[in-house]
Length: 393
Ligand SMILES: Cc1ncc(COP(=O)(O)O)c(C=O)c1O
Image 1 (cartoon, rainbow, N blue to C red):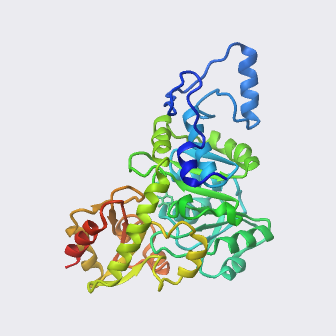
Image 2 (image 1 turned 90 degrees about the vertical axis):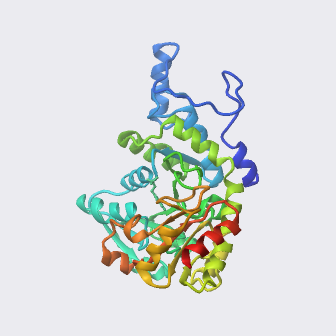
Image 3 (image 1 turned 60 degrees about the vertical axis):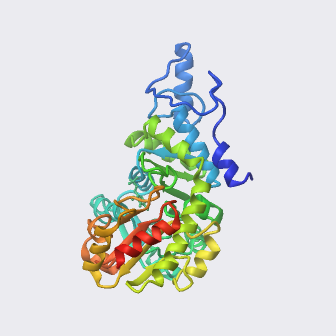
């Protein structure tokens, strides 16, 4: 296999066959013509059968979007990928393609709030139940599984407390019971962690985050075995319609070329900042899997082969008021939700990203009112430390 740095630059892309343009053009087209009626009929038949050759209509496939899909599949060591208009479109479509009324899902308790909302509000309305478990012990997943369980779903590191779940153990448990295993790999990215190589069936990304990397395009992706992605998932994708625009796919494709370089810096900056904050007198607690005292550190060392990621959370001494003060005083860090941007973003999960999660569920998941989440960017580390230090003091 080619090295990830090389794949990020080259995979899925060739000079444009019609013009020789070296970089993939934005095919800003919704429909495609054919030489005659027979060719149209053949293209539609092939597309219906899940073929990836030829184009009919952009909701069914587009050359810019396809280049992105090929690159994402290569980066995650997957056979095939499908790109979506957002991370939530990818998650919702993947879930709906695998469950029907009466089915059951087991998921780690700390989930992105949108995913939590789908599992606890939208799916129950369709007669699909989810059991949320503490993900630090595989026995919790095993105990929660039922004969009707169709999916085991995890996020590791989790949002926002960076809890670590054993990926290989989840994959093995799921396979033993004929259940599909799914992971949201948005926080780690394929640079740090490649779940398909550990036996997971489906990897999900909010490409809005690190894969795009520049905070300028929404997107999502699902990566897995070709038979599932190109047939079952593709059919749901076409019906539900969460297709990215060619322009957003192009921005994401462009961002993805520098993913390994950016992640090197995100990893290094976050580790340095986590160490700095954990020694800071005004900080109560830091959550970062790269710190030796993080409960998931040993596991993270084994499965996060490229680094511990760019996300960390912390509690300032003094709870909610102290947390709010830090947020109001930062000058370099940007107060904003989202993550994975080259800029450092700072947010208060209880009132922003996890606002729609009911307080009891937030508390059960360990998300305190004073928690602050940082998406550590690629700025100079001394500048970031100085900014947080002045905000904390
Ligand atoms: C881990 C994770 N998964 C999925 C999503 C949803 O992605 P999007 O906002 O692109 O729909 C997010 C959004 O913040 C996220 O943090």
